[in-house]
Image: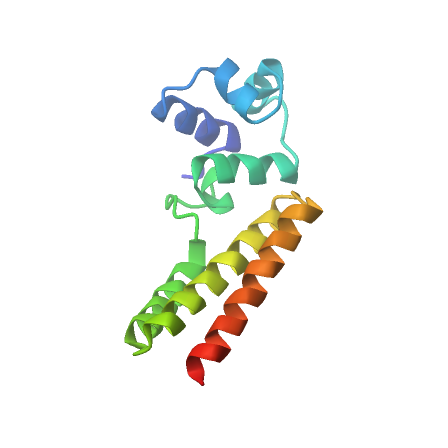
Length: 142
């Protein structure tokens, strides 16, 4: 049985023992709007759905009621597990650390783009981390 966005949002809020006022403040909306989302009289836009997913650490499919699995990595978790195994098999510790830094920076950059948080300083910082990690991998392989 599919659950609605409002039902899932309300369940997540209650599970964290948050008041509507506190959650609304944390997500930068009014308490009234949060109440409308929870009771289904209003539907959120994509930027809000992304903020709520980030806040609770769940996937969009979960918060939208499309799946019972709250894994924020969704279908990519198998690929990330495979990457983790490959990284652990690498003999060079510095190469493993650099690759992890690169993947972490790439994931944060992608998350920023998906959430609509296009803060240029943040993205520039992530680009710098990715570039630094790439150079580290190149040096480690030499």
